[in-house]
Image (cartoon, rainbow, N blue to C red; front, side):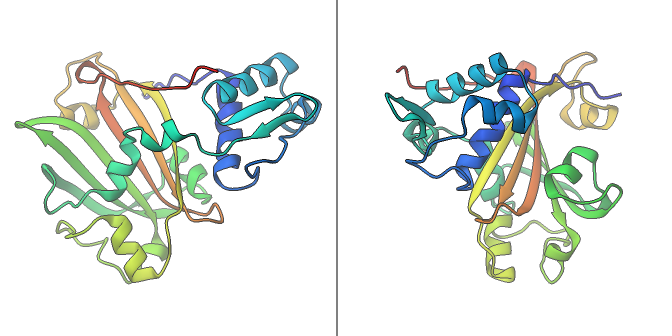
Length: 242
């Protein structure tokens, strides 16, 4: 059985608003909806909405201007500079990366991935699973899922390592363009297969980073789940103090 630690409501709302800023729904310089509008739109309490807005102000996505309300600043510089694990998953060249490709094939889409890709449950998608290693130790398990129609006509279904990143391969073969990435981090216990691949003792959790890569319209092109042994990770973040 898999357990996940779901973030608080205000964090989930902040993540939703952040995605809308990233995809251009809330453009830089424009006002975000009022607290009343956000309460009605998302069905959340006013304190939850206020905490979500404060979180986005703290991290530099929004700013309050006297007499004008809360406006969008856009993607903060510190976010651009951060070492995003999702970018690494999208840009990994399997033929030169430390590790090995351990699984390729069509599988029923997992529920979280189905939601992110906008696909019905039990739809088959293409899976590529890569185990990253350092000094012979497993450090990251990356499961990348692609809509079957998008993978058609590409080498993604090959059992051989790609000589370029999946992003580069898709952009060249399918004439599409990756525009932005949304990352969702949670903690859970691995299933038996994941624990075996990562060589984890019983009871050791993993950090799950769900990476949703989209085009400019917001359509999901690829979803990757990065599993990182919690006992082998140290995460660092940087944010702006206003």
